[in-house]
Amino acid sequence: MKFLLILLFVVQTLAIVSKKGIYARNSTCPTTPTNLVLTNQTTLPDPFTFLSGSPVTTLSDWKCRQDEISSLMQTYELGTKPPKPSIVTAAFTEVSASTYSLTIGCTEGTKTVSFSVTITYQSTPGPSPYPAIIAYGGASIPVPATAAIITFNNDIIAAENDQSSRGVGIFYDLYGATASAGATMAWAWGVSRIIDALEMTPAANIDTTKIGVTGCSRDGKGALVAGAFDERIALTIPQESGSGGSACWRLSDAMMTAGQDVQTASEIVRENVWFSPTFTNYSNSVDLLPFDHHLLAALVAPRGLLVIENAAYLWLGPWSCYGCMMSAKTIWTAMGVPDNMGFSEVGNHSHCAFPAVQQPTLLAFIDKFLLGRPANTSNVMDYDFGEPFNATQWANWATPTLM
Ligand SMILES: *[C@@H]1O[C@H](CO)[C@@H](O)[C@H](O)[C@H]1NC(C)=O
Ligand SMILES: *[C@@H]1O[C@H](CO)[C@@H](O)[C@H](O)[C@H]1NC(C)=O
Ligand SMILES: *[C@@H]1O[C@H](CO)[C@@H](O)[C@H](O)[C@H]1NC(C)=O
Ligand SMILES: *[C@@H]1O[C@H](CO)[C@@H](O)[C@H](O)[C@H]1NC(C)=O
Ligand SMILES: *[C@@H]1O[C@H](CO)[C@@H](O)[C@H](O)[C@H]1NC(C)=O
Ligand SMILES: CC(=O)N[C@H]1CO[C@H](CO)[C@@H](O)[C@@H]1O
Image (cartoon, rainbow, N blue to C red; front, side):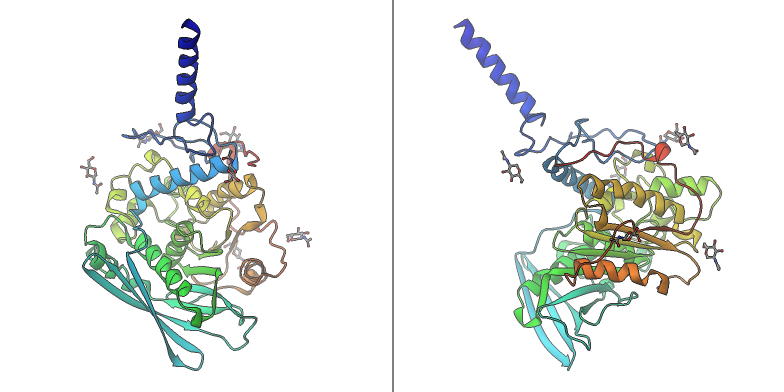
């Protein structure tokens, strides 16, 4: 009897330990604490430690940690990305010899909305089905002729003129004007629906395992969020996304404290509606956020990410972007695929004018992730801004080898 009681005790203890995720992490993720008390953390949060304090040591732990990060970012910054609507429809029609229109209908309950994107098949067709790049507002990077370009007018999904744009756009017609998603998350939902529609439309002849997404400036912020929240995107290319994109809130605040005229969270929430209304509450206290944008990038791993930045504009936070993405790179390194992530920040060109010097890097990433050709994407870390980033000070974690 005594023996049985002891055995029961041991079994119970094991069950409790297992619930905490110390054992059996493979099957269940550690529970994210509820009623989270946010603590002041002035440095970038450690990617490899769960909120519960337990370490990320395996690839399946990392998958759990990505779920945790995704949930935190939706709660505190971006708002909720709704799942695929109950009904999605797709209509594919010819506009001219090389241009087609794809009209996507989404129904949830009694409401139906629709929007259209333009698919341009370029002059030199490669093997079909074709890879494609979804370009917010049209591509401002050169796209090889063998890939199709899908032009996405994201403002139809969620408007972004100023504060009066809150809740305006077909996303909010479907989910309600008080839906928590800010514009970047609403657009990401739109990108996912484009991919749903492509999957349903064999006539479009697009290889949905070879989809890239890009956009510049505010649309670059959007492209990064889209890549982070849809695993079907093979290559994410945010261009000059700056603060709210590849920059980290904490690092941009540090630049401002140092007297540099950089966009910060406290400015961005007054300028536009790119983020959830909840984020406004943290815009003057970004140290309370249990994440920063290195962890937004982390949601893209191990898929392809090429971050294109411009050192010529202080407003974009060139040092912040570099430090943030250097810190994010540790995640691809931990997963054993460091070459899948690159950062290229050069100066001497206008905002969103893609310079020739970045072209070989861009083409290498497109070759590798969209065209399925061998390409060298290793050691892409170009930095023209000069100001060094002290990882010991800002990103003081050890990078594990996740297997
Ligand atoms: C652990 O996860 C991996 C990857 O998902 C899977 O292949 C493996 O079968 C899992 N093992 C157990 C014991 O669940
Ligand atoms: C902002 O914080 C206040 C005080 O905690 C809370 O009442 C309010 O709901 C928050 N606003 C949003 C949009 O989350
Ligand atoms: C966090 O701590 C730092 C350093 O002590 C302080 O300057 C900052 O105001 C604190 N932030 C918050 C949100 O409490
Ligand atoms: C790949 O590119 C990197 C960076 O430009 C260079 O250091 C490396 O030698 C190249 N590797 C090969 C195999 O060409
Ligand atoms: C980097 O930061 C660490 C920790 O704050 C500090 O000890 C070290 O001196 C810094 N290194 C440089 C080169 O400033
Ligand atoms: C030739 C030239 O204009 N070089 C500049 C390029 O941009 C970097 C960073 O923005 C400057 O430091 C160089 O002087």
